[in-house]
Amino acid sequence: MNILVVGATGATGRLLVKDLLDRGEKVIAMVRTPEKLSELVANKNLTIVKASVLELSDNALADQVRGCDAVVSCLGHNLTFKGMYGHPRRLVTETTRRICTAILANKPEKPVKYVLMNTTGNRNRDLNEPISLAQKMVIALLRLVLPPHVDNEQAAEHLRTKIGQNNKVIHWTAVRPDGLIDEDTVSPYEIHPSPIRSALFDAGKVSRINVARFIAELITDNNTWEKWKGQMPVIYSRESENN
Ligand SMILES: NC(=O)c1ccc[n+]([C@@H]2O[C@H](COP(=O)([O-])OP(=O)(O)OC[C@H]3O[C@@H](n4cnc5c(N)ncnc54)[C@H](OP(=O)(O)O)[C@@H]3O)[C@@H](O)[C@H]2O)c1
Image: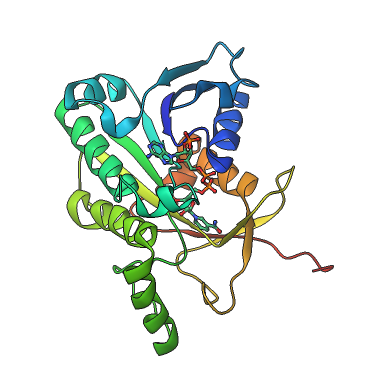
């Protein structure tokens, strides 16, 4: 498969690129700083494109996605004042919107998979996901003070409402990790259609390497894809008896 990864230099993106390369897939990593992928650069299945995704023209973006079987966004706002409050305020949403437009413009013969790394702080409005009044109030506040939260919500809404369930060209999944942690190896994890705990008041954990593994499985394993296509699966690392 040919898989384009944006956000490939991020803490999760890098692990995803490695997981896909380890499976023998061909990966195109669109990155601002190629040096951040220096440990993978020798792999002949990796193509690094130095570009800031939102600065590409529509035509250039369409060229990049042409021939891709899947696109993954592991983008996230850098956790600095500029990253959170500077431009682009809608990094993830605009990237999702523009890449989807580029895929549609190419009129590919086979559907293209789009996987968005999202968050349990976001709800799947196709499902009746209950949240407490307190959580509703905190999320309303987060929308006011944390632009990246709104960005994550709107990116998933673009897939859910603008691409939808019956699109013949783009099939999508928005993966919702709970609190991200770093671990060296993949461990048992569980996937649910909706959160099983409060993302704000009782957050669970998931390692980035487990998120990368699940996304790689989604892309390369048809059964996994068919199970979660058009949904917003939530991922938690399984708690060991020692936790
Ligand atoms: N932290 C949590 O507990 C948590 C929980 C659930 C979901 N999430 C979500 O998970 C996602 C990924 O998390 P992560 O920790 O793996 O991300 P990360 O390490 O912060 O990586 C972010 C990626 O986005 C890229 N990026 C940032 N600003 C950009 C811009 N203006 N133009 C182009 N690329 C840009 C970065 O590129 P550079 O390397 O060039 O900066 C990097 O590749 C985020 O959307 C986050 O909201 C986080």
